[in-house]
Amino acid sequence: MNKQKIILLSVVSLLILFAFGTFAYNNNKSDEAALIAKTNEEKFIRDYSTVVGNKDAEVTLVEFLDPSCETCRAFYPIVQEIMANYEGKIKHVIRYAPFHQDSDYVVKLLEATKKQGKYLETLEALFRYQNQWVVHHVPNKQVVWKLMAHLGLDIEQLKKDFNDPKLDELIKQEVSDAKALGVKKTPQFFVNGKMLQEFGQKQLIRLIESEL
Image 1 (cartoon, rainbow, N blue to C red):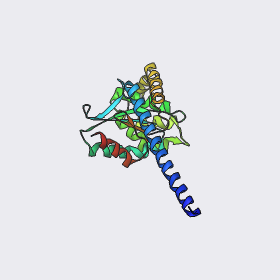
Image 2 (image 1 turned 90 degrees about the vertical axis):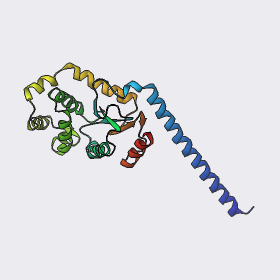
Image 3 (image 1 turned 45 degrees about the vertical axis):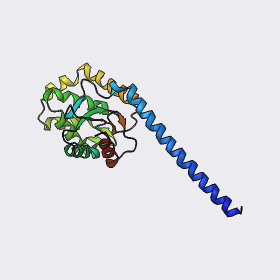
């Protein structure tokens, strides 16, 4: 066997080994994600979690987000579009992974708006005007409160609700669940308990369609 054939066979063998290794790695990642989903089923949705859409839908889309996250802001209208395109078929569960500095403060404030029935309106406003209240990934608390006033919220009542100790426990639970489910970045999506392994709009739609 001449030298060129030996080199060619070596290259082919390496490519086969690489392909097999990649396949095995992806399978292991899928198995790992499935195991996490099965053993942490109760951690995907809590009694207090906000659920948007048909609560009896066959597909549950769980999103861990951070109000201060630019990517979460960019993906917000994409999620809205997906919900519209698959109306009645998906329920969207909003969870938190406040990784940015002081994001837990904004999460707490956002949750406090539920008492006045302004949660979704506030979430949308936080994303829409994010560049005004987030500076170098850190929230400007004074600007956030001014935004709350512009939304027509009763600020005095909001302050009382904001100081409810139950909200501190809620945030601790969110952080604990995010950690248990392997959430390391935002936004992180789960579809019927399956983690979105490769981030992107097309990838998310493919995963949703595979569950329909």
